[in-house]
Image 1 (spheres, rainbow, N blue to C red):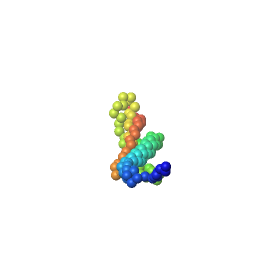
Image 2 (image 1 turned 90 degrees about the vertical axis):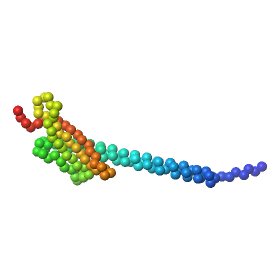
Image 3 (image 1 turned 180 degrees about the horizontal axis):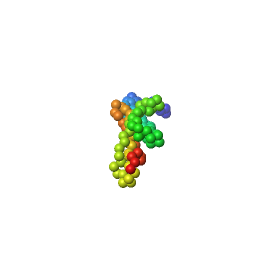
Length: 129
């Protein structure tokens, strides 16, 4: 007795597989797109935090926070990032050291929105008593 065995897929099986791919593929692509955007955002935030830390250390070490140089950019190495610093009297100062607070903010534009990272530190004021 000879059995008639067919190899291959039926039209219904092929159509079902194509339908499954048509449903799953856009969802997978959207997930990959979101993951890529999140990774890019995290990378920029990490770069900005490093730049902010570096600039804040530079301002404190050189004393340029006292001369009023309170904004700029990171060109030519990081032209997409800008920074600005604000100096204020530290309101919770109970030490009598006339502490001042330097708030440094690094900004950049991502997908049409301005994003930023902020760092602060305390420095001893220049006023003498």
